[in-house]
Length: 104
Image 1 (cartoon, rainbow, N blue to C red):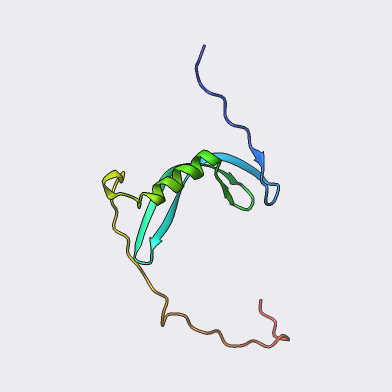
Image 2: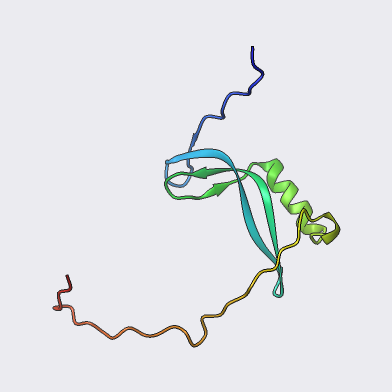
C-alpha cells in the first residue's frame, strides 16, 4: 500500500472554461518603483488555455502578509541579480502598407 496522495483534478477556468491545473508558479512583484522581488513555490491553478493563474484564499493571505512585512531580505530563499533593459530608442516604426498590398 502506498501513501501517495491522488492528483488534484482540474477545475474549469472561471475566465475561459479551460482546464485549470494545480501546480506551483513564481511571480515578480515591484513593491516600489526601484525594487523587484520574486516569489517562488506559489500554489496555484493555471488554465491550460488562457494561462490565467488563480490562488486560493490562504495563498492570497500569505502573499498579502509577505507584502505588508516589506519582503524582509533576511527571509529570502536566495538573492539574484536582474539586468534591466529599456526599449527607449530601440523601437522602429514600421512603414505603412496599403490595404491592397498582398504579402506572401
